[in-house]
Length: 293
Image (cartoon, rainbow, N blue to C red):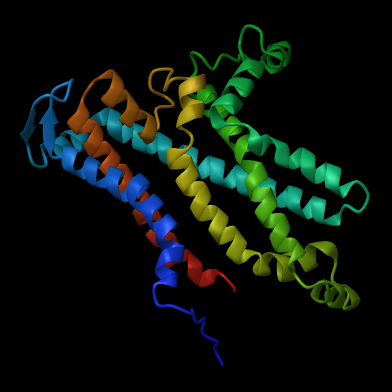
């Protein structure tokens, strides 16, 4: 029998959710509506005059080969960061769940990188891989590998993937660890008594029970790579070399604040919002079917 929550007054539920609704309206619906409005206008650089152009801005966006290139780079970057950060976060969570002595210190060290801002994380890894003074780049050169992410687009994208994944792993680690610790120990012990090894116990019992956590992290990591990685790109590569790391959110910034194409950048932001909403819908529509609650 389902127990329903009752409140002493009819207005109390609305009052409790009012702060969250206000934040959502101010920081999402209002900016989104402004972007949609500006995407059908052609404005001068100072915003003093505007002209209604309909869908011309969207046509220019999809006819721009650099935008299609940025879309491909964003897809590769998003998949790489999601796979690396989720797999390493899960690995660390499994290891931390088995630690008995010094577990608190071990978990603290793993969580610390999450306190670092994405831009700072990018600068840190950029310094380590700096082709002139970087420690890791010196090791690579001594091993005979020609490392210079300032002129090699693939190396620059690899560096951004590494820095962003390092910054994201602690977040995934915390949720995976909480999920592992919520699994009843009786299930694991029963499987061990039946002769199942550690690998079998993980893949047949723990991993299916972690699927809700993994699904949640996959959704939020996808959104993170599309939006919150701007700081790392801006601090390390600036979208270069030769636009090799110009992801969609950074291209919106370039075309808006540097090229001063306000209408075109607004159209790009609308397309980006639609892409993320579409990806989230697909994840909930098809991938969630395989999630065991």
